[in-house]
Figure 1 (cartoon, rainbow, N blue to C red):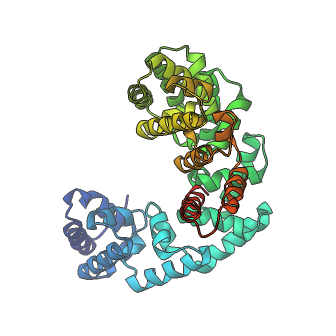
Figure 2 (figure 1 turned 180 degrees about the vertical axis):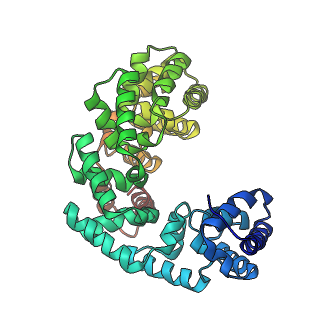
Length: 400
C-alpha cells in the first residue's frame, strides 16, 4: 500500500480533479488517484500543465478527451511529456518503420507504451529480431508497420513466440511470420492459448490436429475468436440449412471464415440469393456446400453475376437456367464482374464456340489475345474499332 502525506494528497486531488474535468468523466477518479500514487512525478507539475499536455496528446492521437485519458492511464509518463517530444518521437518511429505518420498513430492506439519508445531502441530491436530469426530487415519492418504497438514486446518475447508457434504448427518460422504479417496480434497471444484453440477446434469439429493447423495457417483470424465458437457456429448453421453437421464442417474446412461468420447471416444470404434468382432454397444450399465462399458474398452481386453468366451462355447459343448455371459451375458467380464482362464480349463477338463454363474459366491472357487479334483485323479508323478499343481498354484495366 502506498503511503502519502497530506501535502501529496492535496496535490493528487488537484491533478485528479484537473484530468477528470478535462475528460468529462468523474468515474475516472479512482483510477487516476491510483496512478498518481504510483507515479508521484505527476504531482510535481501544475494541474494546468498536466491538462494542457493531455489536450495536446488528444490532438496528436485524434482522440476524445475521455479516450485520451483512458489511453494514457497504462503509461502515465504521457501526461507529463511535452507534446513536441511525443510528436518528434512519432515522426522518427514512422520513418524507422517506413510508414506514414497517420498510419503509425492508428496502429498504436491500443499500445500507449509505443509512444515512449526510443526510436534508436526500436531500430536496434528490429535489426536484432531480423538477425536472430534469419529474416531480412524488410520482412521484420513489414510486420511492425502493420502493428507498431508490438514494438513494446521485447526481442526475446518475439523470437521465442515465433519459434514456439513454428513448433506448435509443425512448420517453419517463415510461415509463422507470414501468418503474423496477416494478423500481427497473434504475437501478443500466449502459446498456451494458441494450443487451446487448436485442441478445442480439433475436438469440437472432430478433425485431426494437422487439418486444424493447416486452416489456421491459412486463416490466422481463427486464433482471435473464442475456440468454442467455430463448433457452435457449425452446429447452428447445420440446423439452419437442414443438413448433416459433417457436411457443414466440410464446407467450412474449404472456406474457414465460415467458422466465425454468423450462422444466421449466412443462412439469410443464401435465402436472399435463392429469392433473387427464383430458385429453391434446397438447391442454393447444395450449391453453397460445394462453394462455401458464397456464404460471405453479397446476394445482389451474386444474382447479378448469375444473370450475366446466363447472357454469356445465350450469346453462345446455349440455354441455361439459373439453377443449372449454379450446379454446373458453383464457382462461376465468384469471379469478378469485370472478368465476366470480358467473357461476354468474347461471346458476343463470336470469338469462342465452346461451352460457357470453359470460357469463364479461360485464362485472362488468352482472352486478351483473342480480343487483340479481333481488333487487329478491323480497320484502325473504323467506328467499330475505336469503340471496341475503348471498351477493351476499360475492361482490361479494371479486371487486372
